[in-house]
Length: 138
Image (cartoon, rainbow, N blue to C red; front, side, top):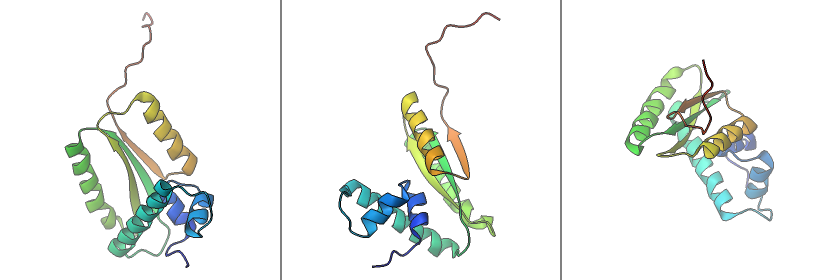
């Protein structure tokens, strides 16, 4: 079966490598169930985005990283999703990385993974993380 979208788009939306997406969609070995579910979710999201925006050209992807209460992150996601289709002729989609608390090492891991897979922009909303440093005199 031919994938419904370019493998590159599925990989970008899912945050997985192109090789992993190719392996999963072509029924090759060594694909975890969680990975297959991620790919299914990415395809469903792409179908929703294509149906809403009726896009056929190049898409820009932004990542939104938030450490906030769930009600706030839900409101921000709804606001983004309401505005993105109106940004034509540009076609923007957003990947959300949200949690009520994110340890500093996990935040850094998220940002490194975004850098590794690529993004056209990153929005970060989280409180200042306190590091155990000694203050330098002024």
